[in-house]
Image (cartoon, rainbow, N blue to C red; front, side, top):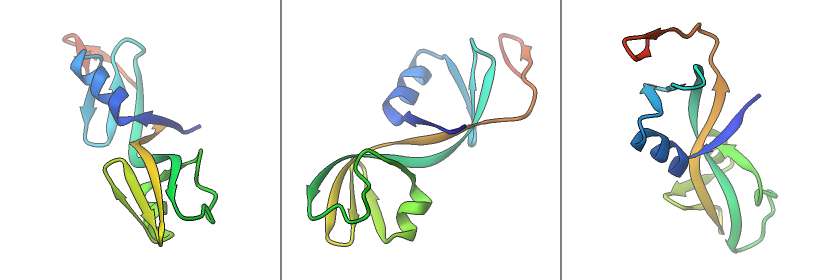
Length: 107
């Protein structure tokens, strides 16, 4: 199952040293869980235009956004002539590799 992780939450975890980031792999230290991350956005609100793609309230990977002609710019996204407010973040999928703790971190 995939979950959306907002960029602000990931930044908070990193500031508290609760996670280890290795490329696209996110490791949660306390829970000993790992996730593969891919860039995504949550569509928060319609700014201008019509929501013909019915995106408000949904999370889409940035690759999918590009496929429908969208362009993400920080906290907004244009899809054709329609502008949305978005929340940047990542789709997180459970990683399958085993987790071990070594020297206070993950190895």
